[in-house]
Amino acid sequence: MSDDDVAGDGDFEKLETIIEHFQPIENLFSVMGAADSGVQGIFVRQWAEIGMYLSTNFKKQVEQLFC
Image (cartoon, rainbow, N blue to C red; front, top):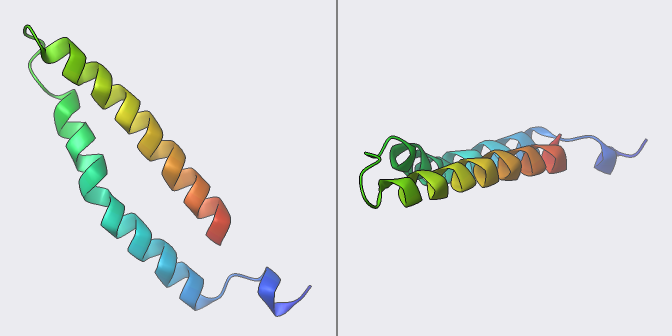
């Protein structure tokens, strides 16, 4: 196994930085999910569900790249 096959400390820091910078987007979807289900609320909640799914999937993919 070469040194390139092992994630170094720098990779972990990059992963943490990416996740940290992505957090506000994930928070937006969380807030949207808590929106009132009034007239337009159902659409906001559906978009939030889609966003949360995409956020979770994105984080898993990034972690797989670095781990």
